[in-house]
Length: 611
Ligand code: ADP
Image 1: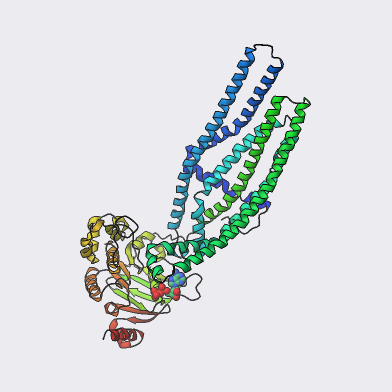
Image 2: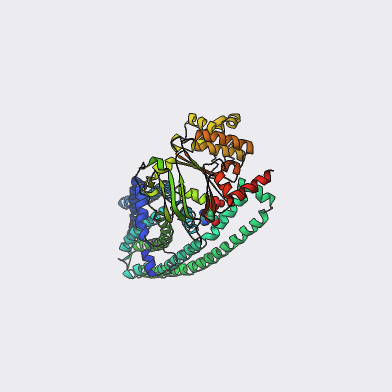
């Protein structure tokens, strides 16, 4: 993978090396819409050639007029007709230039929309192949955001500039073809006068990119603060804790830092740009004088003078347009290096193919499983060995941070163990086809998502294949004890939830938990049900009712449960107590009470609270 060119100083090698992405950007545009790309290329060619033709016809007009004046003796109808034809021809050519330019704009506008959509889809498709741990890595998260923020406009910009460069090169070559007849030196002056501003342009492009890159942490903080200050689910705390002014102050401070840097850069760029631009003016007027003198001494005709001046002036604009296109391409390439760095982010391949295990009755096993979060200094789960047979339930208890949720994430295949094995039906996880294993596991996390969708779909997400299946929603809601309250909602299962959209309803935490619990029952073929604090927001009576009912629904399944309520935990066939990632006790409620250690202590502590 090509390393993004970020921290290297801007040298000539970088100037050249950095154009490596132009070809890929053109490939991207080409595959987005072939016909538009071809049209763009043809129009560019036309728009490149025509200006020289216009200048040449201009010369013919002036020369014809001048010679006609010199020999004018009365009515020279032939000359009138000739001049008029040239004038009309020039008019037609100018109209054609305008038409080609319109056509270019048209193609670009459509391509811009298509391409921005395409790149965003590429970014999202890539995101779908990544692992949870990659999203949790802040450096990677930065990469993703940088790719998203700019890359949808950059590829087209790069292509526009590439075509613009081609168009101006064609114009310049045709101008040079005319001008060289006057003097090769004039051509040299034309090109040389543009170089200094080009160098300045590229230098500042690189600098701006680096500022942008280095500052991405600050930009992320700004983004985050905006969210905290304006999002509906944050408003409650922001108002009550009176956080607003403090957060706004931080927002302003960070913005000011970014702004100051931007301002310094802009000032420097513009001062240099103006100074070096003056050079171009000097070159133009120097050449103007030279051409004027040549005309007076009779070296060239008046028509040639008009043409050379026009050609020199337009040639100068073409040179500066080309050079600033190159500067801009340099910048676009730097940004694109981000996009491709993201798209080429390696993905850990899970290549198993098995859809069934050899020993069905073996259920689920953890064998000496350990896992450390990237960058953490101690394992979150260490040397854990567990076994759950079909039809049995397992409860995990432990203090906050003891590794319960991590254990579940391992079980769900969201992380891969650093050492040890997780086996299902006698087959290691990595040998299973990912979809086949995911289909067998149904999980609700404590921080399950409250989708801003209809109630029915909020239940339906539990099984994406049945997302819109109304009968299944109802059945799942009955099992998850959500049916009663859903029936009282204004539009039943069609009620929109959340506040983002018109007429959205908000639910209580307990009601949301029932929706989440119903999701588990969407998938009839799930064999392992994993519940992370599924009833924490429910009252004790509802909880008992739900678990009585739950047991009868899950007789042949494996249930893994995390809960802080011992009234729930004690029902499980096996209970494991985690401490700092290790299993310190394992057994049934009775066994652990007899053991009279950590479990018994925690149980008594809670029981005392109720007495
Ligand atoms: P529990 O669910 O028992 O409260 P967790 O499994 O969430 O505990 O956390 C176990 C340990 O792993 C804690 O020390 C926690 O700080 C750490 N941890 C949890 N999630 C992450 C994460 N995404 N990245 C890094 N460390 C984490």
